[in-house]
Length: 140
Image (cartoon, rainbow, N blue to C red; front, side, top):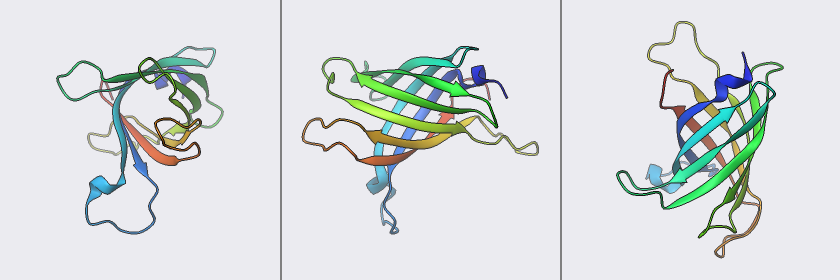
């Protein structure tokens, strides 16, 4: 696998790490967004995380920068920093590209990992973690 395979447009979803079953799946919701990434052959990664309502202008945008490696599969780390009006947002991401099953039907490329709120903002403390999945929109 090649680090440039990380490039693409994804539907990003992150989930609170609650150990007990919930009666409403929305209780696990941390964020939903569009994640656009470009990975260069040297392993540098850049992009944007765009939170918006369907059909609306972006509500908030975070610039993403990081590194990817392909030692055994593709792994990556990203740092997300908000643009105004959310310039105080700072999140750190650690993830991998999940396995593509040779016999899988309609399988899409999926990123999985964890996210950390690196700095407090809007009354939310630093240190909050969540798990994330990002499903590739373009291509497979």
